[in-house]
Image (cartoon, rainbow, N blue to C red):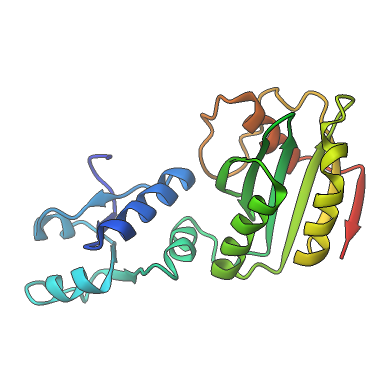
Length: 214
């Protein structure tokens, strides 16, 4: 990890630390891992779980450090706050349906939050339900790329059902030229080389052809 940062992380729970690390890499959050009390001397923020907080408080005065307590329930929201997102107005999902896989990216406002591939839209719905429960966005917009290849057509009944059950806005987006370079205006990883995931990013950031709201 980077050699210096104003954010110092002390998370005793290995599973929570792994989750924090993954989210931080996605949003490009700069931090150093707590190794000694010396590392807190120049820190402005201590990101810590309850177990580590109790240990550190015994031997160190934290009155001059902003303490951000993280847990399994709030770690995603706290990471977003650290990159300047205090309220998630919208989750925007860019979807590129392929022959066998459905590729997707998820933005929280303008922060790249998640990406991957699933075999069914119901699996994507599970991903979105988990994120929604953690962040409680004001709205969720699912943008689906459409192209002459027509892969998206076979998925449409499932997409419509997912949109209706989840109360999402569904937007159809022209998929032409979406494997080109992505805009750099968003926060988060910009080194994604997979053309299908690049297409998803461009779909998420592009205006739609048709919008259906439930």
